[in-house]
Length: 492
Image (cartoon, rainbow, N blue to C red; front, side):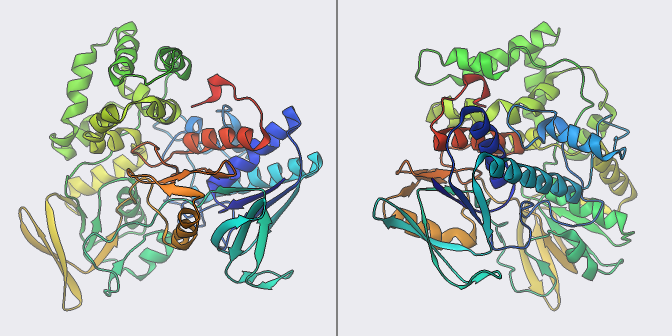
């Protein structure tokens, strides 16, 4: 086999780890694995490169393991390092994203070594793949210029299988500001973005999700004294993580969803809601009260909701805890089993779902609360337009108009968005009939030799892929590549 992995970020790390585990336990075969990654951030991707220490991993270790089914893999790696990163609010380790990037690098290197012991040859080519086409009985990959000691210039690579691990798209420029002085289209790394922002400047951040929270927290950590405005059409802030409790879900699990699916066909959304209702009922909690609170996310005053949730970090009720965990561990599996009409029902509540599934850590929520109470941070909902104005910007919103010296774009890329650097590649795949673009976004392989791991996979959840989802996809793909039988309990 000659497996070509296009992209060298977290998805590729999960795939290499799964190949090492699957090949070692099932004797699935050997050959060559070639990883194509043009950027210097090998294994880290866009999110986990070197950055400010204030840019933290926004989730507890249990949902950050790159190894499918081993929820302690990341926590064990942290423990081996000896340093105590325990967060005072959550009672769990929380680390800078750059340190999590080291975990991805470590996991990739361990997987490469294990694959080598099994007889695989693994190599990395520093080049961008621009085309994949049929070539005889196999596939051919064409690249732009290679930048390594062994080879120079574009070349063609033959493969038996291709796996796209190209990551997500870029943040959309909703107000056509690219090229304007003072506008940052993509905030990461924040160490570079914020270095040019004077301490007293008025900064406006487009978006109010986790990336926007990172910008506010990092500005505060740098001692920023100017005003900060979060610009949002909805004005919804992320929910806040609660301290984990020793009560794993008993009903909202992969096994229970698999039982609903035992006879084939779709799983009904109402049946999934029934699992959650039973989960809360067993804990003595009222599902209807919880659902009412949840649906109020888009209508509540976001500052008062933030204040309430900060005060409830240790609240023993399990409702939000169950959703915040299982939307990552069970959700991607359940999504694949829903009918399109049920998916459409969930998409109508997308802003609430994103707020719950991607909550901010209490430490960052505390910084936001302090900035809001001091008046240095304001939320500006109902933004209609942002226009350049003589070296600064004018922001028009439902409440009037305001100015800003700098604009930072913190809008999250939409799920299944195509990265700009992969557009030529996807055109070649669709033009040759190897894959097709899905009407709802993402890529559907039409040839069994082509696979997708990551946010680009067609039919994926309406929320950007999380680490558990990447790990589960990687494990399924590894089994498909090595023609081994999947275990139903690991199909999250």
